[in-house]
Image 1 (cartoon, rainbow, N blue to C red):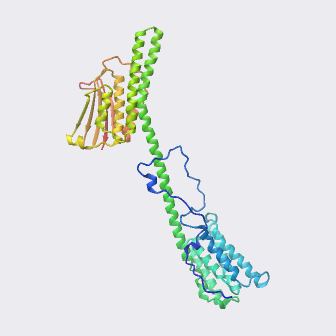
Image 2: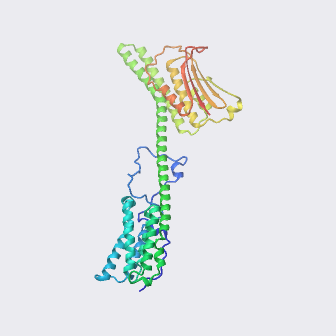
Image 3: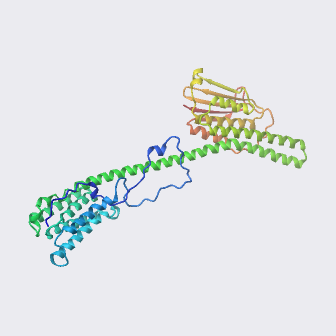
Length: 437
């Protein structure tokens, strides 16, 4: 049986590694789609420890990666002659086994085989392939040289791959041209010279593989960045909720606790009139706390609140009417301009905190609120006059001004708070928040 015609090795999939593929890469829509729910920070992440194995690539079928080498081996068993247990047949059989081992070793992961070991292994494989061509009388032993050359292009860097593939071509062509072995007349020496040509297919396959690996790595980096951004958004939202809870509960609960402690002390002293007064104050604080809690829940549930109307409703619910002044460059600016929901919510929380502080530290003092729209900013000013009734504020949490400064800082604005040193409100207190945009 003759060597037969040379087989075309043009399929790129024949020279890559035999690995399993199937990585699901998140798209930009699922990573950062508006309105999507960010993952909880306490949920376990799917980041697995990285291994040294090559990252699997979508679109690669491991069965195809093994099908071609197995086909070459099966065809070799059926066609390569002589093959036996003595004489030339034994030599052909040993060389055939060596070629099979060199071809199947292509499935070894790249991370486990150094470049030096790869050069030695593939060089020995080329020698075994050329020796099989010269020793056998007929068959398809030349296919081992073709497939090894293709894998050389995939496994090794371009320069050593080209050198080794050129050596393969010259060695196989020399065996046929110099008529070494009994089967030289069955195969032209040009076929041996072309044995190294598949190295170009291997190089292209390696380039494509590296490009896909880079794309997958970039996708994974984008996924990790999206997760980090989502977690940061969760932490930011938690901080905002914590500030809202503080604004509603901290001052109110501290005032209620103070009145109840005062009532306990007055009971021991036997002053029932003062006990009733402290009890009444505690009841009023409870009612005010409920109103503030309802307002906060409403603000948290709304996506967009009208700033002027919401501020007016807040002032009216706290018993203050006609204390809001709205100013701006002109009437059209105030009517047409829309304040972002985030700015509205934070300004309302700042107003609530400032009004609570005014009621606590300056009871009976007149309060004025001014909302000023400018071309590039929105300013909220809460100013109260000195107290007209006895002050019994107790000890606060100390977080009120800190929370207001945090809110303004998140919006890129500035907040000033301090005593009024001149004018009709001298001796009072003023809080001013300026938000750009």
